[in-house]
Amino acid sequence: MTDVAKEVSMKPAMTVNAEGMMARVMLAFLATAGLFYVNIMPAIVSGLIDSLGFSRADAGLVASLNIYGAAVGALVAVFIITRVYWKPLAVALLLGLIALDTLSIWVTEPLTMKLLRGLHGMVGGMLVGVSFAVIARVSLVHKTFGYLLFVQFGLGGLGVMFLPPLAPVYGTAALFLSLIAFSAVSLVMLLMLPAYRVEDAPKPTVGSDIQWRPLGAALLSVFLFQAANMGLYAYIIDLGKSYGLSLTFISPTLGISAWAGLVGAWLVIIFSTRLGRTVPLFVATTLTLLATIALHYSASQSVFWIANVLVGITWAFCIAYLLGICAEFDKEGKMAALGGFASKTGLASGPMVSALLLSGGDYTVLINVAAIALAACLLICLYPTQLLDKLDKSVQDSGSG
Image (cartoon, rainbow, N blue to C red; front, side, top):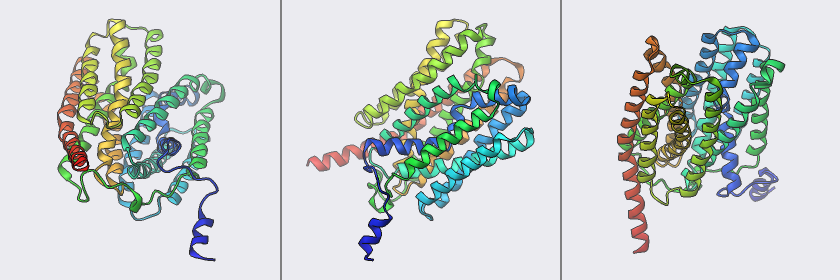
């Protein structure tokens, strides 16, 4: 058999266009599979408490270890993504997730669940890191991250809406079976994705040498943005109650805010880099900051509603751009995976810092700290965004000349 024949025989029967919409959607599913439990985390925590009798502390620690495990896995992905073929690795990681979610169905003891979900987080974090690295090899990386956030917020909203009522009837099996189903669908999609070789990837905007200072600023921006938002979001129900709002009002508000994230993700897909990166991020991050400050006036139902819905939109919008900026610093995808690590570390650290700040039960300090973190993110992200926008403009000018 000739080399050409061998190459043809190794290709899957159906491979989607590497730069097409279907490929971007499939990459979004692949990246979401590794961290989908975060999108339905309220349902999982509630299910552990109601169905297995876990204490609130134990259920919360299961969630925290799951996310910290993902941060570790994402960091590991940074070092292995250029040493192995990504597709067989992704297959192995998806099968690992399916196996660990299957085992989780039969676990009823808190310590075992914590250890198992921590391991699950590591495997999922590696998958997200690998997926981010592959996404970095596609043109218009911000658009692909927009599809990623669209999938996460859309399916996450469905999960939070329909899964909690199933847990009291079918136990935690309903929750973990939904994760298994998502991984299985992602596995089928993975088989239809092209190879996305490094040598075929578009050249990074900043050139072949990684510029560590702007990259460090981008990574810090990701961490601060995620920590500030998740630090408040983890306690947003109790925050609303502390201002006298009822659960019957808070729950629908949070559901609408989750669906509002679809708008933010859609805007990223529409705009991509047509308006550059600096202006969209500056406007959206400023709106996030103002909405966070507005939570001081949560005693007003309208203020609480508007603030949460606005953050839902801007959260999806901003993080897609911030992760995209990290991905533009190299074509191998290591920096995109590093962006995933910064994101997950922020998601896990925000609630931990919040727990320390809420020892007195006053949300004033927590809101102020979150606002300061967002303001710092806003200032820090200007450095890498302006650099990339200037480089884009110079490339366009040289091309037109």
